[in-house]
Every structure is written in C-alpha cells, then in structure tokens.
Amino acid sequence: MNPEVRRAAQILRAGGLVAFPTETVYGLGADAANEKAISRLYAVKRRPPDHPVIVHFASAQGAFAWAREVPQAARTLAKKFWPGPLTLILKRSAQARDSVTGAQDTVGLRVPSHPVAQELLRLFNGALAAPSANRFGLVSPTTAAHVRDDLGNDVDLVLEGGASEVGIESAILDLSGAAPVLLRPGHITKAQMEALVGPIGKKDATSPRHSGGLERHYAPRTPASLVPTYALDREIAKRKDRVAVLAFSRPDERVDYWLRMPRDPQAYAQRLYAALRELDTARCERILVEAPPDTAEWSAVRDRLRRACEAA
Ligand code: TXA
Ligand code: MG
Image (cartoon, rainbow, N blue to C red):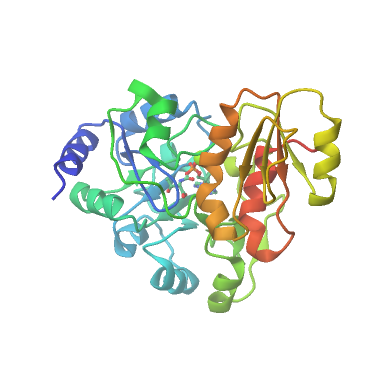
C-alpha cells in the first residue's frame, strides 16, 4: 500500500481535492457525493457550473449503480474496455446529483486503469468526480509536474504516477439516447466500438452539451495554427516573428523552436500535451502545427489539434 494513496483517500473523505494520474491525463478528484467538495472543484477549475464532470469508479459494478438504465451496449463495452480510457454517458440514477451532471438527466461514467487511480478508488470506496487537472480551456496535464504548474496550492495533494500512457482524454460515448453517439474521440476508436455494438453516430445539435465541444479548448496560450504539410515551408518563409513548429519532418534552421513528432498516432497522442506546453514556454509569437493525415487512426489527435489551433 502506497502511503500517499492512503493520505489521498483521507483528504478526499474530508472534502478535499486530490490530483491523481490516470492512463489518459491527470484528473482533479473530489468526492462526487459531497456538494461542498464539488463546488470547490468547479471554483479551482474555473469551470462554468453547467458543464458536467465525469465520475470515476473502481469497477463497472460501482459505475452502473449511478445509472438508472444500463443498456446492453454499455455492458458489452464495459466488459471489453473497462478499466480503460472510455467514458459512457448514461441516464443518471438518484446518486448522480445536479452538481456533477450540470443538471442534465445523464451522467458520465468512467473506470480508469492506471494502477494508482485504481488503488485510490478502491481505498476511497466511492465515486470521484474528476475533470482533467488543468484550468478550464487550457491543455490537459499528463504529468504530476504539469498539475503543480497549473494548480499550485489550489490542490491539497498531487499523486505521482509518471507520464500518462495514452496522453489524450478518454473517448466519450453517449448511450443515453436512441442510438449511440461519439461525443469525443479517443484512444479507443469508433471502429473498435462499432465492431461490438453496431453503428455509432456523430454528434449533432441535439447531442448533450459538453465542454469538450467548445471550439477553443485544450489550447496553449500562444496562438497556434494547423498547417497542411504542403504549406508548412511557405508558412515558415512568410513569418517575420518568432515561430515554434510541431512537425513530423526535420528541423528547419529558419525556425526558433522545433519539436519533431512521431508518425505513429498513439505515440503522437502520448506526447502531444507535453509538446504543446513546451512550445508555449518557447516565447514565440505563433505555433505552427503540421496537420496529421486525415485518416480514421488520427481522428482523436486531429480533434485535439483542431481545438488547440485557430483556423490557419
Ligand atoms: O480522460 C478523461 O476523461 C479525463 C480523466 C481525468 O479521466 N477527464 C476529463 O474530464 O477529460 P473533463 O471534465 O476535462 O472532460 C469531461 C468531458 C467534458 O467535455 C464534459 O462536458 C463531458 O465530458 N461530460 C461529462 N458528463 C457528461 C454528460 N452527462 N453528458 C455529456 N457530456 C458529459
Ligand atoms: Mg478537460
């Protein structure tokens, strides 16, 4: 037993805030049944009160107790992908209060696989509301150091768990309506889920609100643009100010700061947020991001990049 995890569980029981590692990104945890703890969580995140948070559990059994209807598709996906980087939106039970659902009739449920998250959830023996442990709208943290940089003393304890393996937030699948809808793409792909539960739709105007759907989100402070490979050289040549580049290709000597990214989408996702943070500290006027291929395996990375960048 990790003594820090024991301390974390005590802090959470007393209504405190604990940042903890998950396989996707670090979460800022609070007791999901404690209204005061949740309101402090929203204050620290600077998150609007109508944006729901994901509730985390040690097991599917615990998670499904927070839903009043558990469709077969949810059971099938949970069996295959939990613990793991998938969030399911279901109709809420009475346990899920307005404070965690943004007063919607649904709740977001997730069972993370990171061993420290699992140990914490088992010891806490309850439900933890946990948005990503960054201020609202900024890049999610994938290390304990990122959390400390962002939240400083506003969090009571930061549990150490190394760099998050997946690196981008969980896929969110809405199973509360007539047909499944993918609200946020992630490491577990639409095709992997469709193989088990049939066709999955894209979100539209009738899909539930969720903050990941805001246009500018997961964004660095430095303005960033997404540039197609063919235009990268031209964009660099055009710029008169200091520029930082995130690209697949080799550094160009005209550029002040260059980070080279892997051509494998999983490896790219794992490094993405740390890379954006690094480029953000390079004191450049603009970040140029070489757009990854427009294929299904890149869809989660492209989604995050689109939100991090303004139209080029
Ligand atoms: O990987 C993750 O999911 C991470 C780790 C910490 O578990 N958490 C995370 O939480 O990304 P957050 O709060 O940063 O993003 C949660 C997203 C938001 O876009 C929120 O609006 C949506 O999930 N969400 C939560 N509950 C929802 C609900 N009932 N209906 C629709 N969207 C919901
Ligand atoms: Mg977030």
